[in-house]
Length: 406
Ligand SMILES: Cc1cc2nc3c(=O)[nH]c(=O)nc-3n(C[C@H](O)[C@H](O)[C@H](O)COP(=O)(O)OP(=O)(O)OC[C@H]3O[C@@H](n4cnc5c(N)ncnc54)[C@H](O)[C@@H]3O)c2cc1C
Image 1 (cartoon, rainbow, N blue to C red):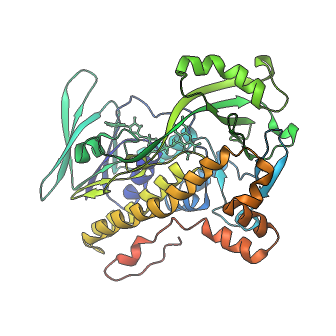
Image 2 (cartoon, rainbow, N blue to C red):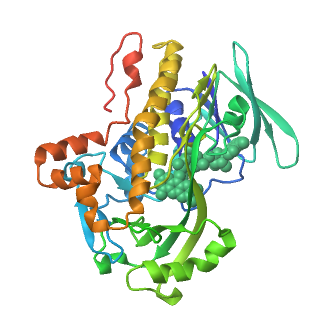
């Protein structure tokens, strides 16, 4: 089998690694001349960490990353409103893990190119996708204007939010909505531990909400805050010092911290109408988007490609027939509509809470966290719910020998 994967983001790379291990030839096409290392995701829930294990990259991820401590929701003055410690996860190999997305991509790229089954083509921008009964193919454009076609048994679009593969299938249709909000993702050396902050903090406020998380071992923090939607990128950058002085504990001025990155972006809740059309498949941001609060965007994408890997490997090894791809579409879209979309929407709406101290009493999810902190049975249920978006596709193999731990 030969699969053409479009987009060398973390999800395209993880898919490439999994398929290559199974002996499938992969051509990975990337529009840019290098991997994207902008500040983006950085915290991976256990269901995504399971996918790192299955791809054989977890040891490298852990060697550079770390297991974060508690998650704390805080009022604007920094006072904790609610804490969550997942004690069982710390004891499990798939414990939640932190590593900046760019470093994750670099690790997976190293594993991908080590395989003789993989060919990575940078500077190949996919323009459109075609298929017939036997194969699927893409047309790419190179920086010098020349064009080249690539053929495979399947084409997978992991080409991100503006996916050209998705547009080739559905035009501009991408159901859902864009929030009336703008987020600025910054990376900054400013030690929030010394103000009593834990590794992952959600600070609730109608205007000045933000998420602050330590993302590297050497003390780099990701601070993602809400910004006025009327500001353009330059204006967001100009306003960043005022914002930090207003929102961060210690009211720091520019000399008090070292800012390494600052990227504004808009946030969306959107899902494609299908993740499969014949021999063309969609996964991760190409298939669905959600706001970043709670980290379900990339985590959902990594779980998609883990499942899609099992489907394609099943076809390659003649353990599954083509109906498994319909299952992939059905199961992954359902997971987005029934879990990822409502949970991530609630996460974002909670950020704007005016009276943070009332949260455990008024917000059903937060009330559950509060009760779980005092009741081991509820806590176990909540721990287990961290795996709800996982799905074992090997159960649809002709002779199910499922041994996948999901
Ligand atoms: C500023 C910012 C902050 C974020 N913060 C968080 C966060 O804190 N938590 C979280 O969970 N998520 C966050 N996200 C979202 C998260 O980064 C995405 O969910 C994740 O990158 C999705 O991975 P992916 O592999 O699907 O797509 P991407 O990482 O977007 O990769 C897609 C790749 O496809 C390539 N490509 C695009 N078009 C083509 C084409 N036509 N031909 C060939 N290649 C193409 C791109 O160059 C890119 O390399 C953030 C996003 C942004 C922009």
